[in-house]
Image (tube, rainbow, N blue to C red; front, side, top):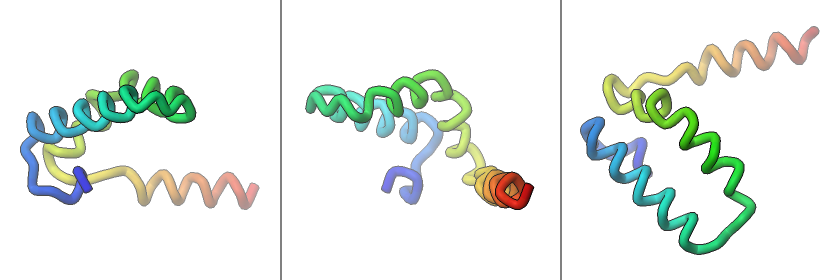
Length: 69
């Protein structure tokens, strides 16, 4: 629910980092690849907290167009 909370950019980043640490500390290996992607694109992902907009609609539309091909 981090994305639905009224957090500033800094607070959002701290919450996500804390969640990532908790997940890593539990030793659940199936999330390693996801966590790696999250670390790689951390700045872009947490930029969401600046104005609360995503590219979800455009990504979904692109996916539908690919399926139609």
